[in-house]
Length: 463
Image (cartoon, rainbow, N blue to C red; front, side, top):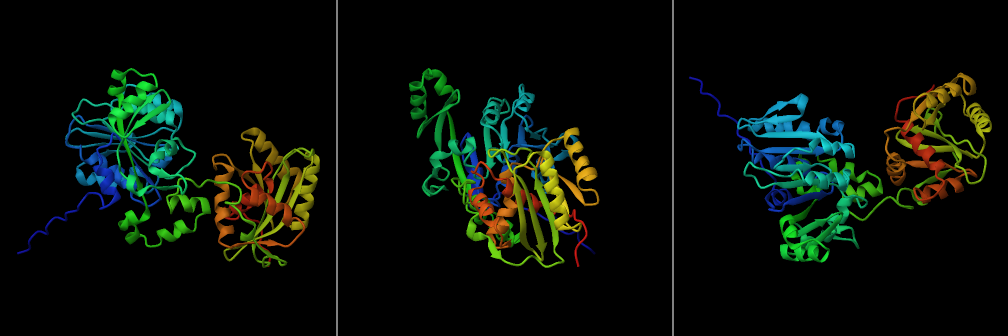
């Protein structure tokens, strides 16, 4: 007689350590932040499960954009593997989970500031923010006013973030951070503090009474201050706090270690102080100098960052010739001039003739719509007929600092060689000063070329 197999039981809960501390804090607002891979988003999703048997419970999870919500391995994707185990039914079109009790958990994006008004009449017992540093303080504090409940659950807020010294979050959690080092103060991890908001100001105290006293001194009446005092805490996370990830993906630490210096310090070390500044993204000594070019069968692109003025205070037109061979990069030539449009076109054509038709040409396209399309059509038809010419749109690609990060990581890893030439000095000056120098067109063109060689848009390879 065959007996039925016993059902597989799975434990759903936090890992010991910082995840457990985050899920156990009584704070009104708790921020779980720091290095990547600390299990922050998973812990955030666990938070709602404790209330799914309450029929009136309503929670909302925010991510900045809808694609981020729906991305593989993102918040909605991860919730599928978790909430289905506890009886939840997914409503994909609405990005919502409905539980047998009637409890509901909603996922939403808040890409623009005005999107906050879509929640004007809402009541959420739990508001969760994934990557809260990607939202403005204005949006966050408006949604705090929607954090209310009649279901018996005390309203509260949970958030995750990665270090971002320029966000409002850095100021909010400053008491928990040693700003000499940029790292959290160990003895303050998970400690509660109380605060009262007066307009855009935050009055802090180590007790509710201290926070109220500060608010009264700031001009708020005592009754209003006592009615609005809230508690907050900050709990840092590191990769070491997520042994489950390290076991599932032993190479994850190496992936973080391969990031650019600034991203590595933030996402691996959890540093809140470091930011992109001169000498951190590119250092002179990181570039290798050689007299030779890359092998003849390397993939080559010429990337142009065009300008249209000849006076000395204008941006340069910069064109970088970059070669890729077996995972190594050569900057073989840099052209940088200040010319009016006709002069620029002549230089671009002369440079293309010198490079040869087996070098793909990428032209940065800043203008959108018909203006940008007309420019590209002109270059393909009239300036560079017969060459492989591609529009390199930077729309939606992030700031120039964001676009420079892959190149920065490769340079720091010793993968980029400069061909020794008279232009080396000016190029290295711009690289060392990036992103704080006024003129950085040569670095922009290098980073554009670096990203372009990975797009798969090439001409013919020399043999």
